[in-house]
Image (cartoon, rainbow, N blue to C red):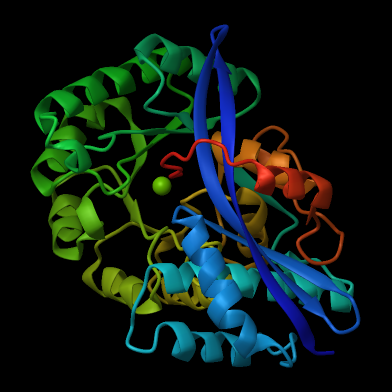
Length: 384
Ligand SMILES: [Mg+2]
């Protein structure tokens, strides 16, 4: 079996979120990557939280030529070839996104060729994974946020994540002082805690939008609301700042969803910068590299969980590996996947059951993808 064709399709997807009878419009972008073999099998990977047209170009114009003719079952050989092709001097960013999508396509293919789901090929540690629901977006006002939290709890979710520090450092020129931004975050977190009561776990995500001073200030003011982890609290996942912050707050810290290099996770673990490492299969070099990072986390006895959304891909990693744990059921990303893929599993009582179908267990709806790809749509910042 040889690789015969590699093709990427960038998609920009408008999404409508309903809360309290009102509609909120947002959007998210993603890039799907197909690898087809000479005997007609197709595997499909995905990446996101990047510029999807750039990834499509990296795949279609550079990686595809290198992969045609290779044996798709040899994922380590291909991963290494892609690394030296796209990131030979330790570059991260677009290269790791493209490698992730290609690697996931290979694992999907491998599963189909062997008649096994990816989670079982990765180790089969468990057949279902717990999820947390990312529901709390910046486009909700305080009351809408509380209403949305209540509705997710009513739907059986006991773990909820909300964003904080939204575009903090990114929008300093407006001006938009960080102290007023985090003061509102404190009130938003209070509103959610009061809405859901003491038995629901609340997670917060700063998306690397705050400096150390304001991340610390926010952490100290919300410790009383029992926060289960503070994800990406500081800009650039700056390791010395994470170390300082972790020493000064009782809230567990999490990071890593957009990192491309496994050595960044080694550095976080050695420095004891985080309580939870969060490589994302769709970004951090696919299942192949995420499994290596999970191994490092196990050796450091540090938690390993999913940040950065795309639960239907990441669930295979967390079901497959013994130290797999929480998967992020990001509601906007899930709505995007529902537009693109058929046969997606749905969580029940906060748990996702893994499919028994070969490979990833779900596939793009080709007619819908063709239609979505044609739509010019209005481009926006699609960041999970
Ligand atoms: Mg995140």
